[in-house]
Length: 356
Image (tube, rainbow, N blue to C red; front, side):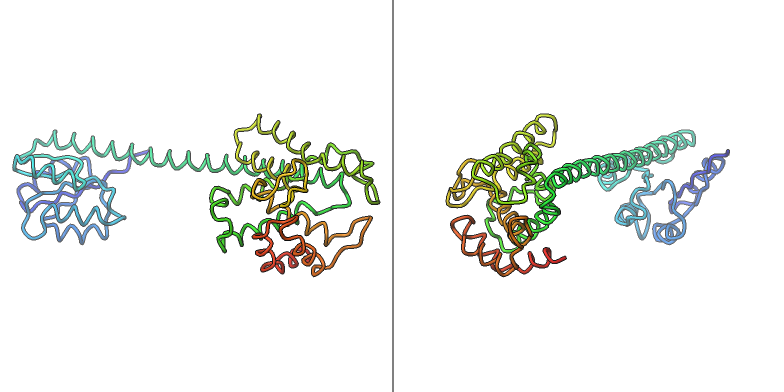
């Protein structure tokens, strides 16, 4: 298969130089001989060359003006330009190179030397394009691999969440709903700049992914407690409370085996702190106030609201209004006061999720 001939523009106001150049190039390249910068700018609108040989000193638009125009246009900026000059002027050469010229050839030039310099620059340009293509292909491969890993992680998360809900049938859909409630809270915290300092370092997407593991510790709770169709005894509830520390242990083991430590840390915080209370009466550690991580304080709203509005074997579902009233009455006791005030403003968004 024949190689496509490259196209060269030879731009010079000297007809003798144009003739010499064309004779040297004609056997190897498609050569356009152009006698002014203005004429070249018209031709380049219709034909894109592979390389431009450009005289510096021309009447009207000189070589510097031409290269400035060529390099400022995205369609032509990558075309290599070799300056032609009859002067030995380092300042002029430096100016041309700084404007984007790839080489200088002094006139009168030797045809074999001219051909070799063009060959080198065309080869370099071809290699540059190949590298650019390779880099683009590698980036696409990396993006594809990253997407695959992300999808795998999401699938694992979803499966673990479904496993928890499969065992805890009485709270079906809890993980999915609390994830949505959490999203509403975080979105509005960012919008209203609530706890701006604490939220600055929180990755919203990562938080919404990792919160699916907040109840993963329930895997270690026996069915006799988890599936009991009545209120739990004191001892049973004490055992159930251990799902927070069980969850933390599971996620710490996960953290040891993964490079995604930030995700695992978010999941650990959700698992161990979503039952802590602002007044220190929660579990498992009895943390109070801002000792409770911000993610735990946020998750408390999502977790409690869902528990209130959903049916349980030992209670009928509360109405949205009743659930809101209970949460607001626990301001400063169970719940962070600042977040409670935000919840009071946005609770209808919770209702929209719960009634879908």
